[in-house]
Image (cartoon, rainbow, N blue to C red; front, side, top):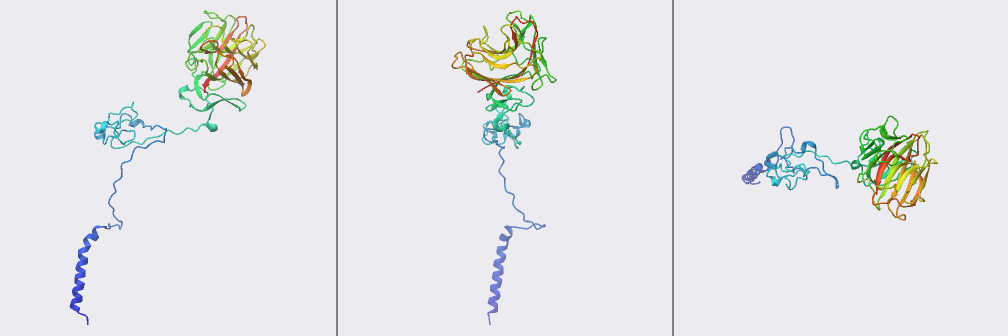
Length: 383
């Protein structure tokens, strides 16, 4: 028969051993009254401000500008840009030393405001820029660059032009302020609102956007400083001037009245690239036969005919020019309504060191009838 006292003593010893182990076991976990396991909170690392994709600037909401970044001595010196080194927070001494000029609002305080990143712009037609339906009245600085704009044509065809917009003179400002100087019989001054010989029109008289310019010349409209009869605008804007070797694309729309009469004498100019003295080395003109052509005052044997001047209807033009005094370097080519009417042709396109642009009506004094023209949508692009 087993030794009962010894067995009992062994059981008691084992029970005592188990009792000594229970506190440690109970401390490792416990259950709450609702039968869920309570866990110790886990420390969460502070979040960095949102970073934008490479090449995009982080945009700080207005609420952050000059207001965020004052709390508790700059916290840990976050700089409001990347929150990692306190460069703009003066090592956490102030937290308010960052400025709007830094673009960082140094010293983000205890919290970081959400940020927004620019949305990538996807240009239509695989990167081909088409001017908006509202017209081309956008400042050059606001236009997308490094894209291939086109000149839209009514028949749907598109003419590739330069990728960088340099100058816009499309009258979408509602006045002539895009241009530098306005000249007519009684005018030779900085451009501003409408004048008797040149007015801004709308209400369906424009080709694109909301506005166009209407130019009128009557018999005897010669200004005090002389020359021919005129109503025209000009620009000496740095981006409208051209020099040796410059390549430019000019887009514009034009219309003359249904009763337009072919001019007398040497003709009538709608566009001039003027050298400052003498006759322009390059111009868009109409001759006594009613044909539109590219004038050439450097070599009158080198003129390019565009074709009959349409009456009473808008036409869209693109002129591609390489500017040079050297006839083997300079060239011109022209499209009308998306159809090439002058192939690339070498010729001199300058007679001096610089050309400036004029638009409107300039004609021979031999004319006695009234001539009028509507012009719209001028835009200059470069490579």
